[in-house]
Length: 132
Image (cartoon, rainbow, N blue to C red; front, side):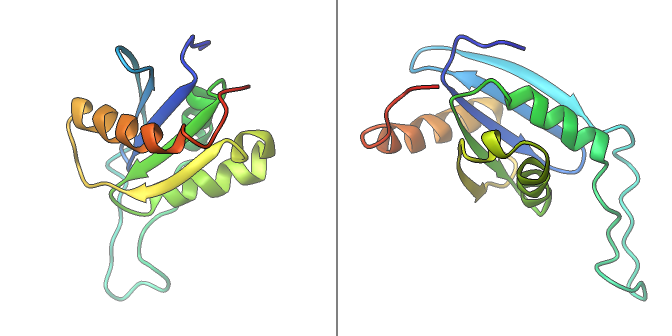
């Protein structure tokens, strides 16, 4: 997906990633779904966290959805946002350099995600040139 917008925000959990490429007045949305979002395992007696690793195909698709952005904000409620950041660092260092921040945001509406990102980037853009 090639977007005319410089900014992108991705809200991600283990089930889906909602991607918005946006400017001050409009936003384009793309949704990426995990292959098997109901495969969430949690056992109290399990070794480790008890959570199954996030599907790499899902992380790859999420990464591709933001690959053409000039700057990216990654948000979400749990650990998947950090798994995405690590996946990007391992597989696309140039995109990793475009990640402005990774922040915890619970389960907002689409409008709230975009409003949050616009507010974040409004302050950030005062010190960051918009070049690709």
